[in-house]
Length: 268
Image 1 (cartoon, rainbow, N blue to C red):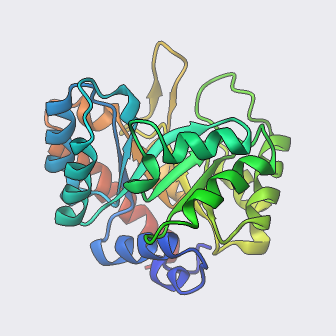
Image 2 (image 1 turned 90 degrees about the vertical axis):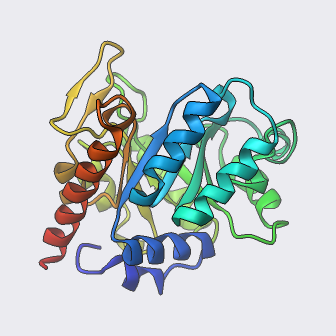
């Protein structure tokens, strides 16, 4: 994967949402995703607007936004179009196929209507992918699923065997599964598991922060350069940006370091 650019890989993937993302990253020259964890509605939209020009993806937890109203997602999609980024609702589905179909399409959030990507645990087995895919196939706009292969919290139960199963399922549904959530310290191991379809899958890594470190709830952070050098494609940054004294400057620095690491990985 290190020998292929995002643009080159965009010509190889089958999923149209993944193709759009890889092309966007190449055109915009950013492999940064913002984890927008603001719960205040006004701050949530302000952050998306301010950091939008720097990112390829805005990752949301829409059910944590207070005073949510349906118009919020319309505002989000408008900002995504204005600033040229895609939206990833970090829903982490983890139920049987029929239930996730309802959760994806119905209720007050109607995730399928506005999120380019969502994600899922593989604990329920292939039925969860098939259920979500059934909903996505009915949409006019392309949608993609990200599988949680690894996690960045200390003591998590996403073992190597779990990651192998995630890869196996991704290969079976590669027209819908666009890639994985991979832990910064274990991305190289994940990449080895995906060698047969190396260019098909996009790896996104949370727990990224300038200088690395950890927090009181056992989250472990890795630097942008380390993550991209290890083979990840997208760094996901939350508190390192919105918790900074100057969020925009922090986003720009995360973006710079991650993009430079990508260029070094390519030998540019």
